[in-house]
Length: 90
Image (cartoon, one colour):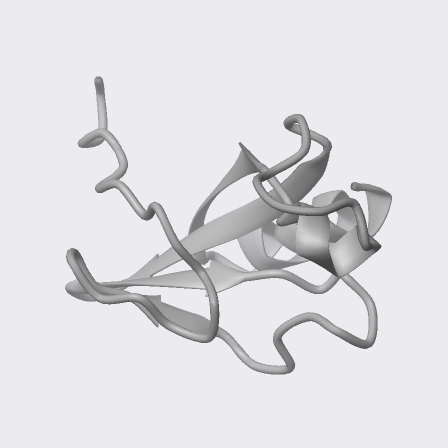
């Protein structure tokens, strides 16, 4: 979590619209069978113009190596269960 926390602070200080949120990791990643573990991971959501991006620099070698665009109803690179974030001021 520390790496994503630091990176989100850097992006925020550069003027990006960013928020951090908890995430679950698929148990298959850790050889724990099916399903997902607890809320033990952190990711950042960056909004640029009219697009939202998932940014995760803290996952390690098996994680994404570039930002992932978030589109409702679209599964990308094993990222499942995306729900539109609340609107600002929610």
